[in-house]
Length: 494
Image (cartoon, rainbow, N blue to C red; front, side, top):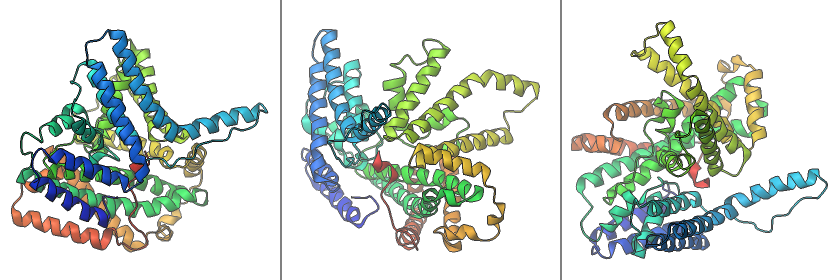
């Protein structure tokens, strides 16, 4: 059930209405059943995987939370994590692992290996697995107590707004709120208004920017060998905007939907393309995943506590794992490695750049300096996205090679850019929407509040004027636009 579907438009109001009128003690049960129904709309049989992950981590946390020897607690933790990651490996990485082993065996004349399993990747498996694993680690560290109420914990793992694509929540935030549902009324008029506004904004990002940009991007990346520098640069830049509008759009709808019910999910995006460095970018992009890897991979590896060389190695490992988390393919690994190298080079050249700035009397407290840093960071991120979008590492390398060797500036003037799925009118609509995105991003950056809260603070007439304009825009220029149709969110594949 897509957020941008007619089914969800029917489903969500029913869930919210029942949630508001049901007795407090029934509310968690209702949300849990609604969440399971939401997930089963994708593939009913894969609900077994969520139940397995829920039960394993629920029991693991309870066993860890008891007074036991440290070695026993560590062994229980290892078993619980291993069981969850084994399921993730089987469904997401086994075929990738087997195909790479087959390449090696074929080179040595040992033949290829056949995959005895054939699974469709379960939607959201990486998200709810990491959320559950993070919980048991927090219990092991003594940061939270094990949750004894199975309904509360099951709802924490499967809460439908963020179930299939995050944000990856922590128990200290989401589980704490779920436990309080039976005790107090979380719903408020202000939260409903700001949540609804945020959902509309997410819908606009998805249907009017991401889906529209996807038409051009898909055509260019599918037949990249037919195009030159201009088309390929446009394809990379539009994918940079597409993936942001798509994923931040999903996060906005998820956070807004939860907020309507009085539940606050963590912020997942904070104007990442305004970042002034790669480190700053990762503090703003997919924040819930970035902090997950920091807390459960980078810091346990030693973080920056064991010298610079070890810090650089830890950074590279963390980004490699992050790349592999996104997909079982070498292009994702290359994407992660590239960002890791960005971070390491940023660390290594920091003192050199500081000395160069001092020698050249570069002013750091001016607009031009920060603008240049943002532009450089944006270009580096956009370049790395080519590896992310390409269907293989070979395609990514071929794409980049043609981008730098097939110069064709004349296509900027012969209107051939309008022959790749978006005509002049569709390009104009996309340009207007990107301009709107920049304006809203600037406002939220300055105000340090999301657009839902900013709208909720306005007068009623202004707020509803914006609501109606967005709804009409989505219906006319979004899901029902020319030559394209609404698609699933990109991060559903992860």
